Structures are given as structure tokens and as C-alpha cells.
Length: 189
Image (cartoon, rainbow, N blue to C red; front, side, top):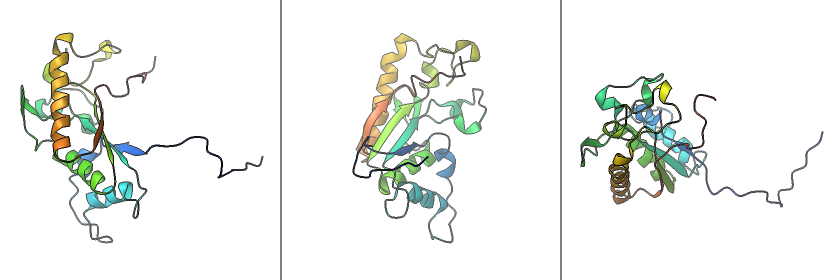
């Protein structure tokens, strides 16, 4: 079978391409040791390879995971330890913007290297706002939200506070997704 490609015909247009910083950025963002070939830190080299249009593949979207705080509480059951996340909230309405520093670093380096769009997303509300006190559902809770309606406004305020903070730092936040992958069928079924 022979396939012909007509480069003058457009079938679809991509507005951008990017990557999620969930699960890897909090590790990679701490890799400060120097890559001898480039003279950059390993984390900076990775950001360059992903987001630079001249020295990398030129992605332009970065997705940042606003964590639910399981790292701080030590609660939860994770198949992969990197899925436990930090949270900026230290108490209701009080924040420590130095938390999640490795993942924040990678987001900032992505923007510095060419990402012109940042999407903030959430895998879980803050643990204290969840029904089960965890940043994840238990197996018997599948397909049910892990937040009570009484906590919707407080959760929304937290998400907006985080968004406002990063906009104030110059991050090109384009979207806030309070529910990550809402149409994904989790755990089969």
C-alpha cells in the first residue's frame, strides 16, 4: 500500500502541544547537578529539551498539578510515591508559596524556555476538604466525588488563590481545571 501526503492540504490544526508536570517534576526539579555536555543543570537541560524551539522539541503548553497535600500529612496509599503531592495551604486561607518548589521550578523553566500557556489542574481537593480525609478515593468509592458540596466554595477559593499567585508571578495561566481528566474511566469498568 502506498500512502501519499499532500503537504498543501490541511486536515487539522494544533493550537499547541505540551506535557503535564505531574509525577515527574517534583523529582526532576531537584536535579541541580550539572550536565557536563551542556554546562546546564540536568533539570534545566530537560526543560530546554522539552520547551526550547531552538534546542528542543518546542512544546508550548505546561500543565501544573495543584496538589492535595498528601506529602504533608503522610496519609494515603500510592502505588508510586511521586503521586503524593504537596499543598500550598498550611492552614485555612494561609499559604506557604515555597512548597512544591521542584515542580514550581520546572513550570517556571518551561515558561522561560518557550511555554506560552500554563494549565493548572487538580487531581484532588486539599485533604482537609475531602470526604475521606485523603487526596484519593478508596476502591469502594470509585466514581464518586471526594468532596462535599459544603466545601465547593472553599475549594474554588483555594484554586483561584493559587491561580492568582502564579499570574502575579508572571506565569501565563490560560486555564484552571478543577477536575483532571473528568471523562476518563478510572480502574476499568
